[in-house]
Image (tube, helix red, strand yellow):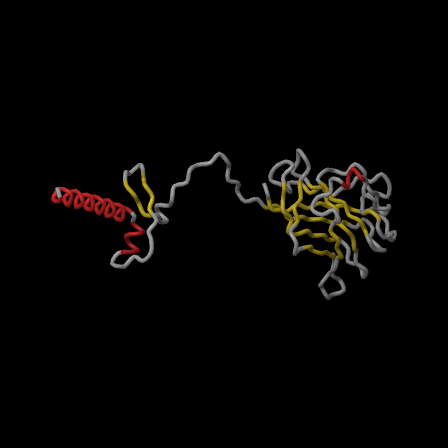
Length: 242
């Protein structure tokens, strides 16, 4: 009986040793890295059902992962910009008034198209750029307001800036808006344009239902002396969240 037990035990050891040798020989990276060396620690193995034996985990034989029902999304990043040219006058703005394309019945919005991957999608906004075609001594200060739907109430140029209650509910990114002050770091007197980039904080925003557009409005907050037909541009960098 003792002899039979020893024979069975020896056979089991031989089978296990042969299986391990076969597993190691098939893991090329493992075999190469450990040839002639002492292996300290543990070796992660997995059972390869197709081959019928265990294999060491490596870059060439990674752990198998079962396919899920979801879809891996490719990275999405976009930069959307829009412009509004103000009227052909140089009337000084009253603080807290609108920037638009007409002094009455204005129709301008900053329509930031393709800002989202999908209709009504969510995005992260790491940067907002605002720049003007003019570079006066006293620079424009204001607030960019972003909406997840086209506002039902527009604000004409140099008219009191008030967001309707129904539109306020659609503010996105920040319900306090994004305050800015334009500038120009160029020292020569003939430098054109003025601008600002808002960075440092990432905000989450949403595009309008059924579209990939975020809509913007600009409020002028200082007594700004504009140029006739001055063009203001708003640009938004977005990163897809879904």
